[in-house]
Image 1 (cartoon, one colour):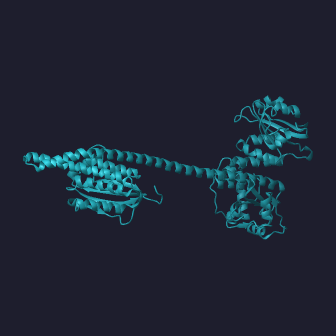
Image 2 (image 1 turned 135 degrees about the vertical axis):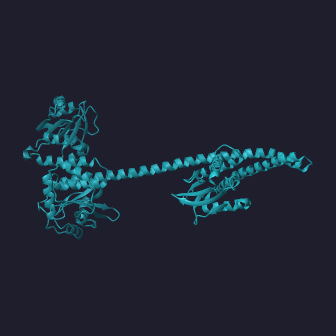
Image 3 (image 1 turned 90 degrees about the vertical axis):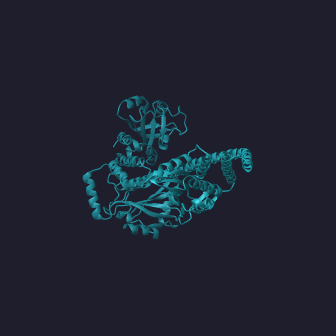
Length: 590
């Protein structure tokens, strides 16, 4: 297989292109990209060493013309031809001296990137191996496997699917061809490796069936990885159960601890003298001939890949384990990426929750300011109205005590009565203003409603038998200002008592549902009275109207200030009810 053919293979797997740059360093292959201005815009460490360019070099020093003038490779002369055709440009055994004065023999290939990156050329360069008789087939296989796995990994953030793809790449005959592959994750808290996932047959018979079926289907590695990517990982398959409860302590002096500490792979031979921890692993898997590959990312141990050829008994080659180690590193990087992705998702959820709380807090502040303005405004109005009302009421009472005609006395009684009613509303407004200055606390909603009901029926004995209160039977905690909520509930009950009872009857109910405390004042009446009752309630609960509606309006704002609401409900038979809801207290003040 030529360098150009290898390059064709890589260009064909454009999805995994970025992740292969670091892999090329491991394989000692230089990777670089030349842009439309004929400058090296991307390169890995190996390419920079072989071509003699610096990572921080200026654009002038990274120009293809300057590099080619030193190497004498002919790349710059053929740049336009490479862009214009699908044919790669390649050189073998190029004897040259790079910009750093190092004598080299290089294999070189360049290819246009095509439609995805027009006017750009990708190149591979490496020290020539022609003298050793290397036909590049093994290297081509490594690049193919790594590129396909990189493509599969780049399309998911799901940790289990990432790990499944790695194990499939290790065991597929189109891949590294191990019989079985096992994944152990590192538990930092216990300094141990815990069995997590495995891929492969659990018996020789199952192995034969699986390999026969795969041979019949003849899937490519890309198709096989895509199939595993879309599959749901099964944690209950027999081969995974082999290691499901395995916990390998990385004891000082053990072979596993040494491998994990160094980051280097190891092939165990059947004759090896094993320590207790490594022997426990071999006994669990039923074989002592194992490939052990640590998974390391950013100098942090993530886990270990273990592979074997239990059923075919084929010897484990150094080249296969070297590629498996590259897969392990890709898996470790992908695991870190998945962990960061999950952390970002969790952080996004936290921020979304915080933003929601801020929005709710802002709404609460607006309600508070609105309520505060209402309190200040109504307090000022109440003080201004009290003096003229006192004067009007005083003169009306004086006239009633004098010798006047009966028709005039009737009018004066009406004036005096309306003055007393207006003064009662003013007293309520001033009481609300004073209550707004009290501290908030945890309140039993059921007890508050019962107390307001007893207070009302004690003052208005005519409605005592026609307005019943049914307890929820258990405390319903809400958080707020006790006096404000008590007055708000009292005035809703008073509205019903004064306007509708009698001739109607009312039932007061408390309860909780869906994290909300509720109060329902249901009005029962004859069918011919129902329309009048509903109209009265609608008028009373609107923001327009007379003095009694002012008290109801303030009561409604009180419920909203406490995070709740109130409304008029009409059930299916047509029975009207005033419905109040407040959030149940869950242990966080405010």
